[in-house]
Length: 280
Image (cartoon, rainbow, N blue to C red):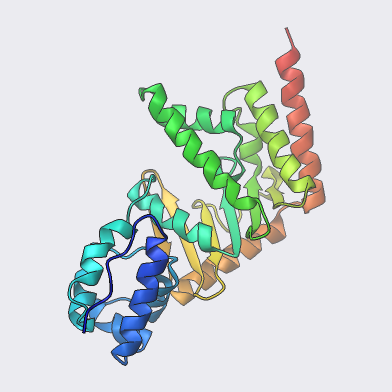
C-alpha cells in the first residue's frame, strides 16, 4: 500500500504534518502518551504536534518514522514544516501564537511585539542590531507588523497583556516615537481589540521579577507557556509548569491597575511625550 504523499510547502505544512501524525499514530494503535514514551516527550507534546501548534524537529521525525513505519515520510517533510522567517528559538512560539485562541503576556521592559507601532519596532530592532544593513531592519520590522495582523478579524485570539510601567517610561526612539507607540496601544484598547493592564512601579516586588512570560491556549490542544531571554526562548508544555506560570500571570493581573486606569495612564504618557516633542 502506498504511503502518504509528501507535503506541499505552499499549504499549511505543520497542520498537514500534524494530521498525518495523528492518522499514523491511530493506525498503529498508540495513544499520545505511548508514542511519546520512547521519544522521551509527554503526551501533551505529541498532541501539540498533531494540532499543528508545535513544529516537528528532525530528531523526532526520524524516530517517528521508525516507530510508526511511515517510510521516511516525517523525515522528508520535516524541513517544509520548519521553514520560517523568524529565528529558530522564536519561530515555534510565533507558530503557536497564530493557532491560539487566547494569549496572555507580561513584558517587563517593552511594548509587546503584537502591539508595536512600526516606528517603535524599528527603533527596537536598530538597538538590537546597531550595525545591520537597513534592508535587514526593514525585513524584521515588516515581519513584526505582519505578526500584529493576528489581532485583526473575527478569528483573532483574546489578547491580554500586563505591561510594566517601565515600558511606558523608557523613551524608545525618542518622544515622537513613544507618543505614536502609546497612542497605537490606546487605540487598540478603545476598539476592544486587546486588554491591557499596567503594572505600576508602586507595586514594588511582584510575581514575575525574573522576566517575560507568555501563555497560550488552544481549542484542541493543551496550553503552552513561552519564556525567553537574549537570543533564546523555550516553549513549555508540562502541565504543572504551565499551571505555575498561569498563577504567576494571575498574580500580576491582580497587582496591576484596572484596564480603565491603565488606559488613562497610557494616554497621559502619550500626551506627555507629544508635549515634550513640541518643546524647543
